[in-house]
Image 1 (cartoon, rainbow, N blue to C red):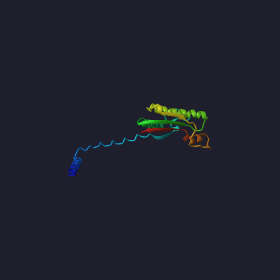
Image 2 (image 1 turned 180 degrees about the vertical axis):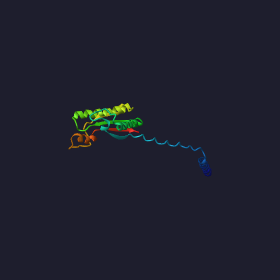
Image 3 (image 1 turned 135 degrees about the horizontal axis):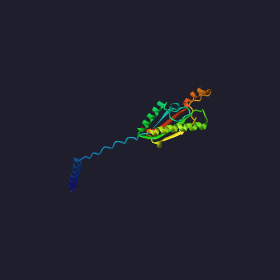
Image 4 (image 1 turned 120 degrees about the vertical axis):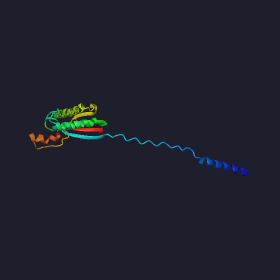
Length: 169
């Protein structure tokens, strides 16, 4: 009887071994999907324009004489119009120190608003553009010992418009 139990055990073992070796269909797992591309990241950039190229001295309307500056603004507007996403545009107007603080604050604000209006007229969404006048703040040059026309010419770098952009292009 021991022999029959042993034979039975051997038969079961061989049967299991043969069943395990039997060829069957092998299921291939589908390939893992490619990882999603990283979302584009907004980049910051800045443009600085001479106010003298855009505006007459003491004025806030963009002049016809400022063809080069206007072309730069038009190119900027075209760049923003084709950007994937524009998060923000900050237009900062600056003046020199000549004149009262209140006059310079107002003039710088009006100049920033003029540039903002230019961009909006060329299709940039108004709600992403902020305009701010900074007056004589953040001067680039000082020119302490000059007067008259020499002082006006020396202070030219302070009269400017800076445009800070955050966009996905």
